[in-house]
Image 1 (cartoon, rainbow, N blue to C red):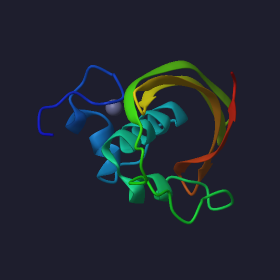
Image 2 (tube, rainbow, N blue to C red):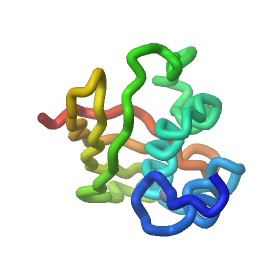
Image 3 (cartoon, protein in one colour):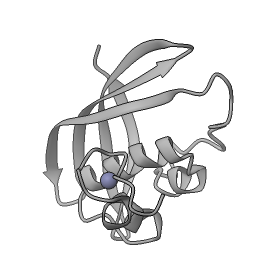
Image 4 (tube, protein in one colour):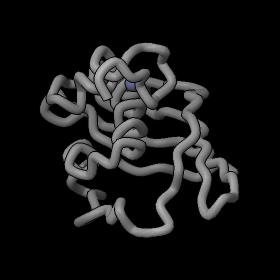
Length: 127
Ligand SMILES: [Zn+2]
């Protein structure tokens, strides 16, 4: 993937965007973490997705290889709302195809910072 554009749609190359977080750099805010998690879904980085999931809501495994596997088409972040120093929500739309059909996931995700690291808590489907 060297030199490839980041799947999150930032317009930057992966290594200068979500790739830095995938390699261990902390997310500066909830939106950046959310974008890196979308990219991790695109790239199939299950370990990263689990590591950035709040322990209270984290599943045991994600089975990203289960078929049919969604083909992720793009991400649009609608809003990033800090609630206090360690809580924030991010509203986004992610588009994907499954079995040739196009779908749209519109979700407001909740994030919490624990020990200096932003973590995904859960999400509310909007549509
Ligand atoms: Zn990115």
